[in-house]
Image 1: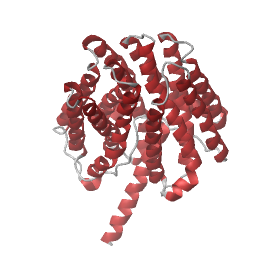
Image 2 (image 1 turned 30 degrees about the vertical axis):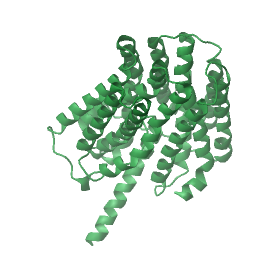
Image 3 (image 1 turned 60 degrees about the horizontal axis):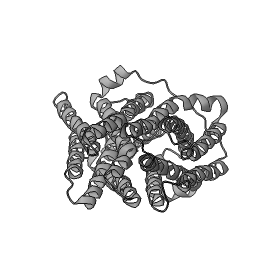
Image 4 (image 1 turned 90 degrees about the vertical axis):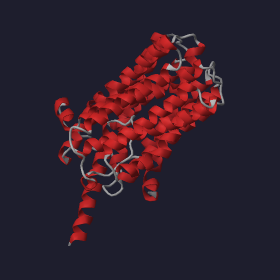
Length: 423
């Protein structure tokens, strides 16, 4: 892993700065929107707009890159992100913020596609899994740092909007100056929705539900925390704990997924998330209880994405994985658009705790459907399943395909080792 870090540190540094900038604006808007007097429903539309732009950008980015190249796409859209971030405190109305969030979501999606393709191109089959693990860590560290920075500024002013703009601009330098070769960009014709659902109904339904959970957590978490009266620093810690939980529990859950029926583990992890939402709903331990709930919700929801992907891959032929990735990202993204909207409606109707109720309900549906699917076909043996590879719900199709390539490589290496032992 040190070799991967040594060869890709500049690229990973740039990606981390991007995550700091993106993580700051996501939480900051929830706080600033309350200061400006936005309704919960208006803020839910603003938050949902990012995921709509992100989904559209993930579909448009490959064609843009093929037409004008990685460098131009990266520089042009990165500049738009930097400009849009500065405009938020200038145009403080829901319509303007919604439009800006669509632009930022679109641009960040394309920027991530470009960055991830460079990262994937800089690795070999042997180091791709290590590079993806570092990428996940860098993303998490960047977002946690973003929450820390929020505690040192005034959300009613301009400085906290200028900082992410500067960080996003600075992120271009290490990426563009360190990467000389432009990677070839190829895309595979996507698999039909019907076929991917026939291959893995639980994977499709689970990823859709998890899209709603993820967008509610990171789109409406700050809105919830603001409405219950937390200070800016308390909100920052509350949001940061979701990501810390994702880092800490990603690997124990991944370890377990390689040693048991993944459907059973999906149900158990989802049940853990439901119990975590009950801590938030009942107010056990007050603020400390909220932090525990945040840690456990993030620690269960984030690994579930990689777990559902690994489960789906178990039923896909190696040649079909790339074509399935675009559909899986789209399914998850569609759920993500709906997440803040429904959460906002619930919070407007029953109060702030609609935030936890929505997450718990979606996880409850995943438990129910996962239990149902366990009655429909027998489980694969552990020897016939692929290895768990960490990946976040914010991944684009490039990171998804790189994860699947790492999965295939690990699977082939495992087969070779088994054949050697038999011989």
